[in-house]
Image 1 (cartoon, rainbow, N blue to C red):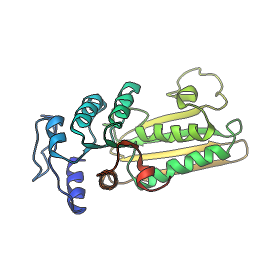
Image 2 (cartoon, rainbow, N blue to C red; image 1 turned 30 degrees about the vertical axis):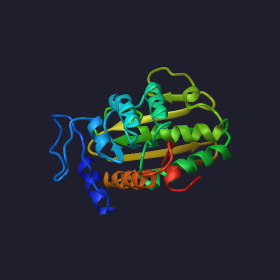
Image 3 (cartoon, rainbow, N blue to C red; image 1 turned 120 degrees about the horizontal axis):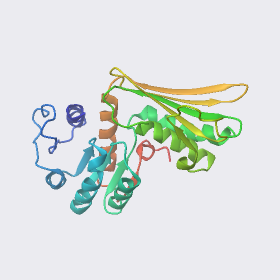
Image 4 (cartoon, rainbow, N blue to C red; image 1 turned 60 degrees about the vertical axis):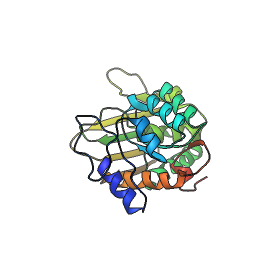
Length: 244
């Protein structure tokens, strides 16, 4: 992602101020200054694009808020405490936080909410199936959670109250109104997500497949250009695309 982001930033006519990486990470993108830590990067840049690890979220939130540096955050697997830190940073800087930066997934999220609002939960069971490469460490994926939240929002409920993930053994009958998740891992799948609404007499499926990570990098750079100079606040890709 670092290499792709550097390429997309330059293609957009912007400047790559630098980057950070773990000591054992892959070779750094050519021509990109390697800075010591997030604080140094925050001082050097107008806006930081962050695809790192959930463990860094709170540290990054503090550093970027203190430097008054905008933040495009695509890291998945954040806890409630992590997300609270992101929201606090958004009081001081513009933050675009999204589970997925592709335009296609952003439209899927919008459709998922509208479909959930139109299809009664007692008649249409909602299930989300996602598949990713074998190296992915969190499940369900951030995008799957995002789709689940869109469905829950459309139904006027909290996802945490109706989420069912990782069913195994004698689980009993499916709870009415539940939103189910299934996570598949294997090979080098970039990302596949399918939302299914299953009723007694019909089934509707909404699927998005990503074939290259560049779509995420391009979307993140688009979000960064949109956020640059914007007022502090917590935004998402729907805002970037003008979906309201």
